[in-house]
Length: 237
Image (tube, helix red, strand yellow):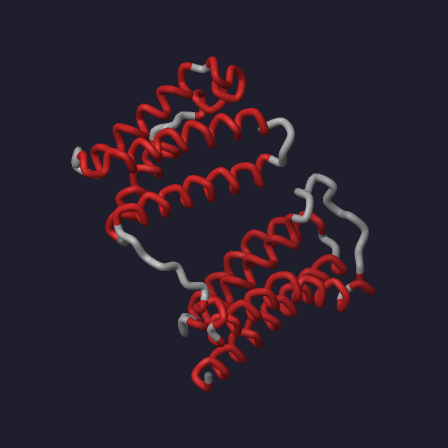
């Protein structure tokens, strides 16, 4: 089952990403069903599927289902492109394609899908920790350092970039701790310091320096604490 899904996934990645130039995407968005690249894209998927499945015609109905559904999903996506958020549309598009691949696998290798693993205590603990180091920690930090809120010193900054950077760095710290890779935290702190040094040296603002230092230490402290608690509780479950 896994081997077949990996083959189908490889064909999908080749057709949807590796062999789909930006020029094709823009042409499809503009001309939709009239775009010749839409049909070329589907043809590439067909060829990729035949190649990874070694032209085994035992899978012909599965191949046809994947190709036809891919065409249908892509057409729907093209007509919703101006009405739905592009990020959500991309995510839904890929999920739909992956579910179709799963359906095709089930046609040839019947299996039962159980969701019992979602209620595993260790998985729930991991989800709690991930939520804590991302969303919860952001709120905690916002509350704790709100009294030192500075005026917007960089209007050119990307919207919410700081929050997302903080979430990612805490996720990395948490992952490094769970893998006992403490050196990774040092590299992360060094990399952040290098990038921040330029901003701070240009600003020459003591308050800004202290504000960033407090935020960084608090962010790393929350992530490290969460990682240590996870490592302490995980073996007990």
